[in-house]
Length: 360
Image 1 (cartoon, one colour):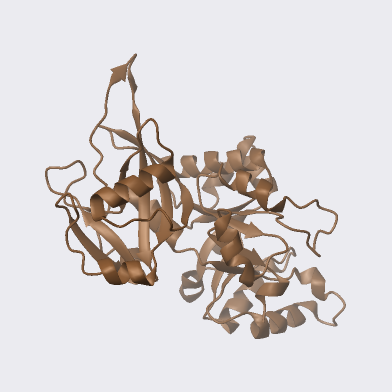
Image 2 (spheres, rainbow, N blue to C red; image 1 turned 180 degrees about the vertical axis):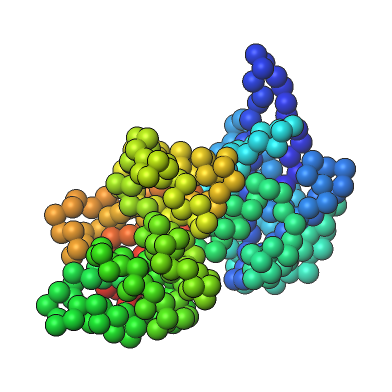
């Protein structure tokens, strides 16, 4: 991703360089380049990409840059937007428009031994686990991309505790049901909506040490302080109401909302343009404060749901237009099943989520 400085200064304003970034992979093998010492951010690995020309869209720039740098033709591959990153290196400001592209088995077979690009740069295929573990030194702006790549393509959501109110002991019934019905190694948004939330979350994580949990904002910093449990918690969740309150400057306990979840990444819920704008503001604020990023938004509802039957669905066309506004990965939610992931991906989703269809 060779991007040369473009620092024309007019009225003290530095021109922002728009860059298309291609996160190219085949299954768990990811393609990285290596920047020469003489280059900006030299002696570091990077994803393939480059500057978007004035006449190009981001996807057009991706196709051109990948072909020029590697020879791989991705014109027929699906490019899924992960997000946009605004970064100030001090000597240069960039806006990275990041897309994930999975190449075919035939393309991988042809290029898996590629050691140098067409411009002479070093290229290497790396294992996803090592990449996410930080084994490869990337520019600072790329580290949020690694957090985005940790998202599972399927996220299960638990029933609220009220769903089990007819049982003699709703908490026990809730725990037993989800212990039995959550799929192995699932990412799970534990959504309880009751005062007993933290204790129930703690018990479920003990019963299912294989799952990765998204918990309500603030839960992990209070009672869920066991090291083994915290390793299972991958993100905290903000409702749209909390997001809007933060955006409107509402504070609780003299702390703005973005400070309440400083130790973990966030996933937020959005339903419209205004909430997506607020999510973008929150993501940038956390980035500037060097806090863990917003790694995704639940955008809902795509289709009608049993949980909220009176809420009009967005439909895929309107959903896709809203998803394009987000500066972070977008998760489809509402009336979906795991089998709809490919359809969701074609409309810009990096993952799908739900309750009934995502439990065994």
